[in-house]
Amino acid sequence: MTTDTAHRGQVALRHLSKSFTLNGQPLPVLRSLSLDIRAGEALAIVGPSGCGKTTLLRLLAGLEVADSGQVVIDGKPVTGVGTERAVIYQEPRLLPWLTVLENVAFGLEVRGMARAAAQDRARHYIRLVGLSDFQGAWPRQLSGGMAQRVGIARALTVKPEILLLDEPLGALDAMTKLTMQEELARIWREENVTMILVTHDLEEAIFLADRVLVLSADGTPPAVIPVDLPRPRDRNGADFVRMRRMLMGRFGLH
Amino acid sequence: MTLQNLDTPTRRARGLPAPPVRAYLARYGLVIAFLVLWQTSGKLGWISPAVLPPLDAILGALWTGIASGALVDDIAISLQRAGLAFGAAAALGVPLGLLMGQLRPVERALDPILQLFRQTSALALYPVFILLLGLGETSKVFVIFWATLFPTLLATIGGVKQVDRKLIEMAESYGAGRLQVFRRVVLPAAVPAIFVGLRLSATTALLLLIAAEMIGANKGIGFQVMNAQYNFQIPLMFAAIFLMASLGLAANAVLVLLQRRLCRWSLD
Image (cartoon, rainbow over all chains, first blue to last red; front, side):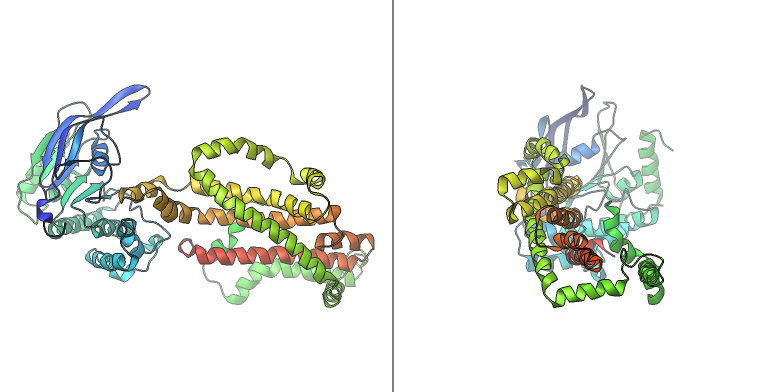
């Protein structure tokens, strides 16, 4: 797993369909969606509320089952949660009775690693997200941005091939959000993971992603838009601004 | 008693640090004033000392009772009754509550009968317990146990059911099985609620202890309260009442201490 991570973390969506029942009526949110995601790619999923972007992420995480179709990871169909994936949620979802260090080590411990070894590796990732001074802190003592970093460190500690992010920065203030976007870009580059990011922030999508998957709520077929901009990306560069205008135009925004 | 009453130490700890003397007065000033008023009203003849003896007479009676060993026996037997009942209630209530909170079918099956039992006053059932278990220790301990079980049981069920689903899902997404989710998420999350239940149970245990001892006992602090009143040993009666109150305070203090140790994460 450590030697060939570069080749792993490949995701294929095959005719994925999912609908929910609302007031007795079936409400389709995904209609036969197919897409190939390269290993190490950063894909952003955007769309209006109700378009199924969070549902798609939950299907990828194995927390939900598709009505038909498959999610295939590294050639194997997904049947549930798996050790090659880690999820980062909008809320940090830290366990309030564990310290920062214990929270970050939690994923590894659940997977059977001994506490000391798990905490050793956890320390490395706590340093990576810049929280070394807060290892012994309780979650209630952290700011929103710090808590989210802990959640990110916890996900990275299990060395996933695929990082699934469900509006991870949605609850943060504007300044913290920009800083965290830079951090996510750095972490994605350094950790060499496949990153699948659900967001409602189009600029965030352009800043982080290689491609943007645009879902709609009205049955219009999904679109995949490549973001061919050099990294690190400049939010005020002419190409970036043009890209943002084009993407916003798709949603009737200016 | 409301649940909020049980949380004063937390709120106090969260407040700004006040100068020690002022903080002390703000917290205990009224108690001190009450005791001073008690002592002086007897001495000054506002109230007949025969009805409300001054504090020194009560403390004197308490000291005599303890020094002579007469009250020590009462304390021991009362502690044993309340302790056994509380221990049994906690030993049954917490595990059963965890089970019922986790497994919907178990809860569905047991809930109606629990509601029925809970709404039936334990004291009303005391004659039934005496019929079934005799007039000895067993029926006394059992009636206390009966009343003491429900606060812990219900608080534990509530604690388990209000665990954040999102935390459970987080643990599951890392591959945690049912047992791991229970041990690492549900149980620690329920601990504060369990302690609220245990503290209510401790209060209930002492309440029922006195009632049971007043009805059918020839030993114990509750018996001493009644007996002293019959014999018009009013200072001794108040001494027994004070003893009772201090037992309640001590039990609560022990539980608060334990709670602080186990729930450091939730306190400031």
